[in-house]
Image (cartoon, rainbow, N blue to C red; front, side):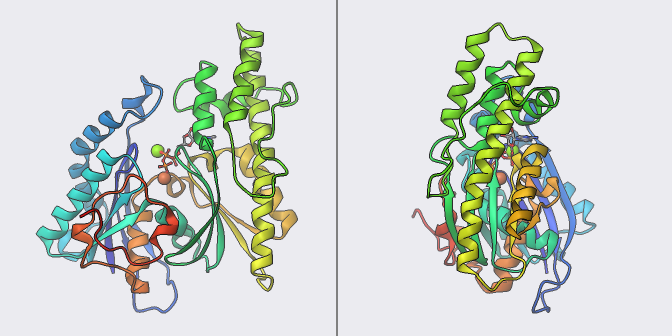
Amino acid sequence: IRVLGIETSCDETAASVVAFDSGASEIRSPKILSNTVLSQIAEHAAFGGVVPEIAARAHVEALDGIVEAALADAGTDLSEIDAVAATAGPGLVGGLIVGLMTAKAIAAAAGKPLLAINHLEGHALTARLTDGLEFPYLLLLVSGGHTQIVRVAGVGDYQRWATTIDDALGEAFDKTAKMLGLPYPGGPNVEKAAEKGDAARFAFPRPMKGATQPDFSFSGLKTAVRQAASAIAPLTEKDVADICASFQAAVADALQDRVRRALERFRAEFPDMKAPALVVAGGVAANRTIKVALEALCRDAGFRFVAPPLKLCTDNAAMIAWAGIERLSAGLADTENSFAFVPRSRWPLDGVSTPVVGSGR
Ligand code: ATP
Ligand code: MG
Ligand code: FE
């Protein structure tokens, strides 16, 4: 089967075609035939963050061309597509409307089934597309909008074990960058500045460290950074580097502590698993310091550390097409009601366990 995926939930306009031999009982080398992503970073940079109105308009302008490009790159056309899958939430509602309505129009015109996909489910299942991972496994999603640990036990079988009680981790990076006068998007710039910094200069707090619940918190850390910065302002380049390095060290340390709890819990739930796996997803997974910390943690705990290629960790449409394929293969695709599906800006992953019926009407 071939599925066209569409993703417009945030600031990437993306389309992709993924093919999969549906005759197999197990995953047999799915193929990403195309993966077209147009980032709107330049449009939002001047504002220091994603502006929903600008994002929605940019999706309207770009999506048709991106879909055409994805089909052309894949060397295919709509007649050879078996279904259209689009992100229907969670995310910025303007972008979701553009993507889902476009997908409905394409599917209706071509007479193909439509699948309304949860964006987080796309992230959650990516490691099966890239690494053929078997269920169950643990997912750490760290992006601009999400910071979650999810137990992934099957298609539609997701249990959120932890979330952030305030800022998402990517958001904390972006806000820290802004405070320090570094350009948007913050994450890569904080990482770059940190390379020359002294991670031991500032003793920033490790939020939630030691707490029994594996939840995250980053707003206290952000406040500590602001206080440290204003105490020594005006900041030299060296100060900024030291703050960034110290911030990253605190984040890596806090993450290790939080994820360790989840690994322990996973072990307890699946004591017989030989090589349990931790999968990371989201833009923050690009960060070397964080990756190294998680790798070390997994090594100590006897977990496999799976980090899909960055292009498939950040927002993309291949993961949406793949989630569609997974749902079709598992018999969990509610294609009959999908045309009635209304985009949901909030849609927790735990809420997609059952086939999605048309909602909001
Ligand atoms: P969503 O949360 O809806 O999945 P998003 O667009 O916010 O969408 P991504 O595109 O996956 O998420 O990731 C963007 C985030 O990742 C930004 O907050 C960015 O600062 C952060 N990021 C990117 N590269 C790095 C890095 N090297 N170190 C730390 N953070 C990074
Ligand atoms: Mg993004
Ligand atoms: Fe995402």
